[in-house]
Length: 438
Image 1 (cartoon, rainbow, N blue to C red):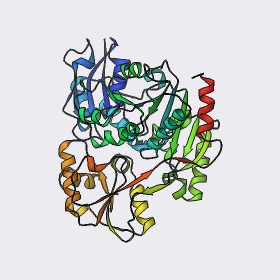
Image 2: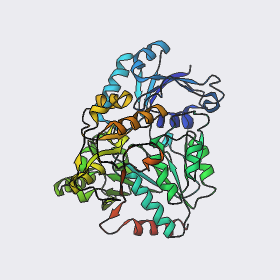
Image 3: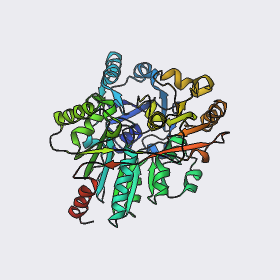
């Protein structure tokens, strides 16, 4: 008898686990996916083009709040939790729901989910969303370029559109992002790499993706999403932690997994963190990982215009503020450092943006750059235009002017990783290149 399985996810790790373990496994029948975290990803079907010959009709995707009913309806044996950035209390609450409904609750580990690359691979992951993976990945790519090595980035999945069409995607130009109808969330991860000349691969089928990326790479860089574990076997694991959220490195799933397997731990944002918090993070690292090299780092903030005394609308990276749980980011810090006056956007929120404030009540005086759909981008644009201010202070990694039409100037906040201790990433990656004879 086949074991009946439901995979709980958020259009990323769930599809990957299915592809590498369940797709051609005749001992199991995946009867459903459930979806959460991301708007409008439930109610779809994981397509037959990706689900394989055992699933000629594809697999339905349901909202997660129907989980208990699905377990009963399909007489489910096992439920697999396959998404990330979850506090431990949340994980066990979901486990309790599944167990009470009669099924087994499972998490999948490295042995059953990681793919081996034919090229040396450096992974960049984190203990929470918003720690600074993106600037760390850019730093690693820049070092490899300086060492005359061709770096190719594979980005954690964000398939919010047509899954079959998004099975494997390569982004090497701004036109590629237009061609694939990228959301704001996707652009935030791809745009800076493209600007720096580093191609990015992403999609749904990560076996196909890495085999294609290997054709042009000397070294592959895994650019993680949320605090998820790398989809590939890593030859050098770099994990980013955040002293603004001290203690989270030991309290979120699967961030602690990353911390335990790290070769290098980058403590980012030290320039704006309290010294006692930095020290506590170091102590927490050592409770679970004695071997990792710790690198102290900061992300200096740069503004492209003077904002002193201005009334500003601050826009921050969406996922960092929402399921990352941060009440602020580089934009708020920049405004406070320069004496700008922050305008509250909440009175002007509409539609799904208004729902974001309702669902994440910790947000105050900041507008998350939400853009999972064309409709949400339109709503974001309307909120910006309705908010009275002198200018928009945009701390997202993308050039918002290319996405929305706004009636006020946009000043960008940028930040890049800067190591402030030795050995630094240059030293570590030089040794990596030498070891693997790249």
